[in-house]
Structure formats: structure tokens, C-alpha cells
Image (cartoon, rainbow, N blue to C red; front, side, top):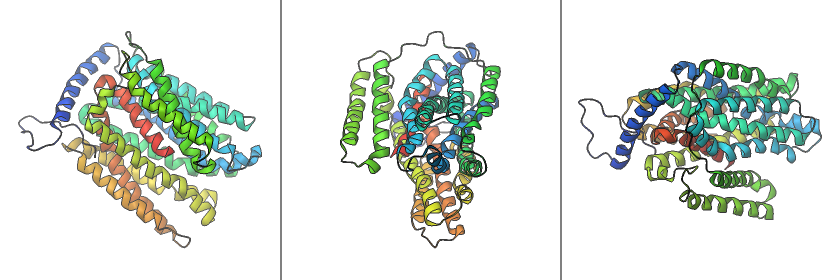
Length: 449
């Protein structure tokens, strides 16, 4: 399980027998580089306060997570309006966003390291807001799917830049707190989405589930240009186009095939060919990256066991979390026959618990020298919650549903902030954008699986 970097205090001896000494020494070097990087960023004109940065990030993250959770509950109405079956092409309204996000995330993180976080964030807001307008005005299903892919491109820029913007704005001693507050924003977007989507779909039109993003996006763009002062980096370095293409093709095909494998059939030629091409592209990636001057992925990151274990834990946790998020609406609507508005309300206990506990776990991550046991305990509790959820049946009471989701949410919240803090803290400052891309990619791949 992930372990956050060690922060020895004055007069406090180093603990004997602490494992992974090499990782600790690497993290010490990362902190020194972070100090130098922060000075350089201040010279380049980034003087915005940490809470100003957090407010701007919160707008973009809330908007992107709201949109990801608000669409699922409206799919039946969308399929009805366009006259297509619910289990057909309409699923691409979700998959197109997912595939585009997965394909671009890592490259977006690298670009954030190269040219600066502000410019990537602004373009992300512009693309996402413009994509929302196109989604709402879609005259046909194919247009909506294309607009969702365009929206996913903006979402990838936002998800890749947001964690590194926070860890740059907040000191290392408050990294867990910052990421915990970011988890609150994500949880609020996830919790509001189903309820708001159900209300809008029931009393207005599904098109407004996309239009609600427009005022938020405009406010976010204005505040970013007004408050953030970071300049475009004068010497951004070189970009690795071949690595970016291999990564995009590999992640896009793997995520798409994993999403449609069950429906189309795992033995289907299109699924087999897609998976083979995607896996070959990902296998070829490290060989290409070893031969370029500025790789899209710094392979040296994988020598750090904290970075590797944090990423693996992240993928597994989101695999489980999104499995619940995907299955519960079917359970509540089709088996239990709850109205769509009630389904939205019954899905909120899990993200609300995350919103309550995540800031606390973030502060605990900053307080303790090691977050290994904190993250491990959270993941164990989340597993217990998932087992409890699996025992729900056609006769389970509403109270039974709620308290089981609360247990799952508590475990996820206890795990996420320490694990994310350890993941980002294990990367050198000049590679924080790439590490942030790994974090967001792990979330998307967990969702696909």
C-alpha cells in the first residue's frame, strides 16, 4: 500500500527499521527540488494565494464531475428522444467521453509540466464549456457523441492539471489537506449529479443537464484569467509525439474494448483486434520512451515503489467504486422500481460520506509520518462495505441501502487523500504534471474495468 514521503522534524531521530530507505531518500531530493521549483515559479509570476487557486480548481473539478454523474440517469430519455434502443449506440454518449479522457490525460499532464498549468487549465475550461453547449444543442445522436468526445478533451485537461495546481499552491505540509478538499469537490459533483439530473430530466429537458455547465465554465474562465498570474514557460522543452500517439491509441482502445466487451462479446473479432492493437501500443511505449530525449512518461518514476503501489491501489479502488456507481441505478430503478428522483437521492450517501471524511483523512495524512496504515485501513473498510452492498436484495429496506453505502464511502474517503498525497509526493516537482496524469488515468481505467 502507498506510503507518503517521510518528513523528519528537527530534533526527531529517524525511525529504525523503516522500509524503502531508497524511496525516502528520493523523496528528500524531491522536496529540495520542490523548494527550488517553487522559487522559479514565483519568478515566473505565479503569486496567487493557495485559497484563490483552490477556488478556481474547485469550479472546474465540480463542473467536470457533475457532468460525468449527471448523464447516466438521463440516458433513457436521450435514447427515447433520438429513437434509438437504450442498449445500443446511445451508450457512446458515456463511452466517447471516457475514451477521449483516457487517451489525452497523460499527454495533458506532460503539457502542463512543459508550458504551465494556467494555460492548460484555461484551454480545458474553454473546451469543456464549448463542448457542453454543443451537447445541449445536438440535433442528432451522432452529433451528441462527437460533442461528448470534444467535451472529454476539455475534461482531460482539467483532470490532469487540477491535482498539480493544488500541490503547487499548497506547501508540502498541507498537501493531504489540499487533496482532501479536492476530494470534497469531486464528491459534491458526484452527489449532486444524479439528483439534479433526475430533476432536470423529469421536469425540463435532458439538454439542460449540459447547459448547466455553461455559467460555471464562464465564471471559471474569467477567474482564471483574472487571478492566476503564471506565465507560459519560456523554455518548455520538447514534446514526444510518437509516445503521445502510442499512449492515446493504447489507452483509448483498451478502455473502449473493456467497456463494450461484455455487450458485444469477448470473442468478437472487433474486441479481440482492438485489445491486441491497444496492448501492443502500450507494450511498445516504454521501448520508444527509452530512445527519445523528452519522453511523455518518465520511466524512472516506476523505480519508486511508493509511486507504483499508489497507482495500483488507485486503479483497484476506483474499479470497485465505479462498479457500485454503475450497478446501483439498475438495482434501484429496475429491481426496486423507485422513481428516478428517488434513485438520485438514494445514490448520494456514498459521495456525501466522502465529502465529510476526505478532509479529515487529508489532515491525518499531513500529520502522520507514514500514511501506509491509514490508506490500508481505508481500503479494507471499503472492501467490507462492498461485501455488505453485495447482500442487498429485493426486500432490503432503504435504511439497509443507505448505511451500507455509508460504510463504503467512509472507507474510500479514508483511502483516497493519503494515497493521492503519496502518489504526487513521490514524483519530482518537474514531473508532477505527469504524476497528476497518472492519478487521473488510474481513475478512468478503474472506471473502464
